Image: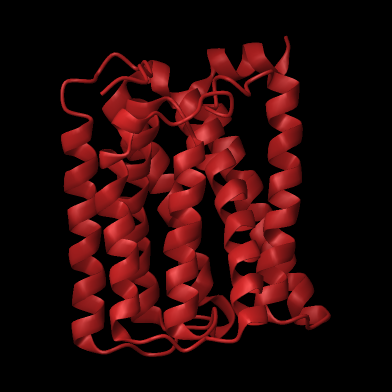
Length: 250
């Protein structure tokens, strides 16, 4: 049995295996960072370089470049679907910008594009595509849950404040739902790579780095609210699409 045959015959097992690859890489690089301190930004970059490489190898072995959305471009008619998530990402800059140095901005831009490519390849390219035959909404929800779960690992080693970590994981679930819906509606993964990078870039610039300390109650509630908005928006976009197919049409 080929890898493609196994993936299509066992969508739940396959999607969970893809998820475990992500978790293993994150934990392995986290342990390496404890043994050989490299800094959180370098750790994140290394994680996503590894994940991007593994993702490319898996897609090539499966022959899923088209199925994952990498051979489909974005059409002008699809652009309005991207306005809300892009606007929410930019709202995070409302609290101020802590990074203005051109070199740092370029570094953050490159890093977030790498993160966007690696994570979208796994969660909306491999996992969502694997689960879609089981139903569109189910695939969107399950892939979003798997996308949110690794965010909880940020609590390990004190990288993120515990309360923020939990709220951020919920927000990630909402973002995953919206991204899954956009993937289904457009047929392309490229806008998600860009949106993912924009969300992370705005967060890094506004926070001044990857470490997140204790946040105010207002900040936590705002993050949770936007998570709810993303869940609702994603489900609205998926309304009436239950057949597990990607149409690429509005």
